[in-house]
Length: 94
Image 1 (cartoon, rainbow, N blue to C red):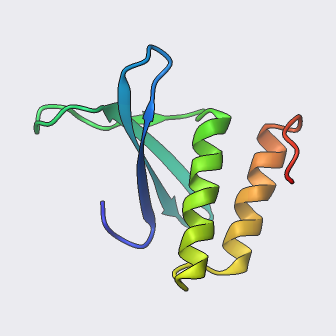
Image 2: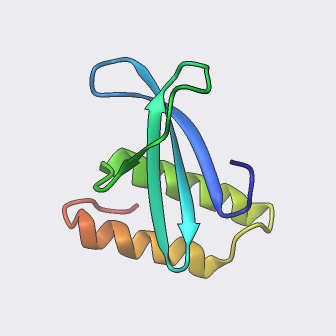
């Protein structure tokens, strides 16, 4: 991780154990990966084909903070919001 197109965070998993998540921007898509919050080279990142809403919202928060620091454009924020609306139509933005 570390490139502009990769953002990461730590969040509790469904089982209550903390997990690392990162999202990678490739072309016009975001790819999500996760692994348990443990150190070691033997622990690999696992692709998340259908990330939950909370991870999409965390990505949106990271990109909005990056926009303030001029790392992302307003179009990046709108693109993520559009993807959230498509995948989770029940979610309402404030």
